[in-house]
Image (tube, rainbow, N blue to C red):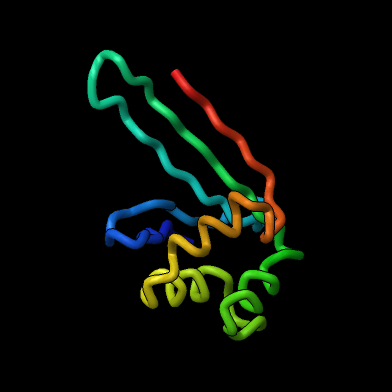
Length: 101
C-alpha cells in the first residue's frame, strides 16, 4: 500500500503513514534544519495490527475498515493533530524512535 499524508491543524503535513512489510502501521516525519543553529530531527511511531481497532474506536470509525482508510478519514475531518497527540501520549500504543543530528 502507498503512503498517505496526515495533516495537522494548520493544514500542513505532520505525519506520513504506510504499512511496513510486517503489516504494522509506520508513521513518520522529518524536520529539516532551517539554519546552522538547528539540527535535523526525525521520528517514527510504529503501531501493531492488534491496536488498529483502538484507532478506529477513538474516532468513532469502523473497526473492520483498513487502518489506512480510517487514517484518511481522520486527516480529512481535521483531526490529524488529535491523532498525533494520542500517539505521543501513548493513548494509542506504539513504539517510538527518534533521531537528532
